[in-house]
Length: 155
Image (cartoon, rainbow, N blue to C red; front, side):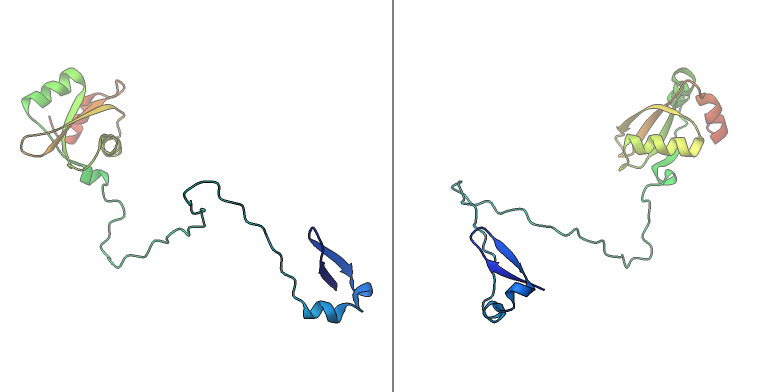
């Protein structure tokens, strides 16, 4: 419908009626837009950022793949029932557990909340000399550690 002619500052569009005589000439010459490149002003070349397609996850062939590696039953292994742990339950409103070595305090807090339906105030952890991780889980004042301990069978 329209023919394009190269002009000084860009393209000029002409309607088909007036350009019917010039059509054979325009068909012979191909119009290509030329852009001027920006000059580099730095001594080193910096490659421009281009599109990086995000890598799609490949489906696993492992049928035994575990979705949640650390659910609450794998985080908390068992409670400690020593005299010192009993003293902590009575005096500090604190439960003591042996937990998985690779979990962090946030995961321990969430696991205790899910398992025993209590609100956790804070968690302290240490690695025992035998290599096990011990967690001191202090409960919120709204919950009593004695009640929770008797419910899980520590007392």
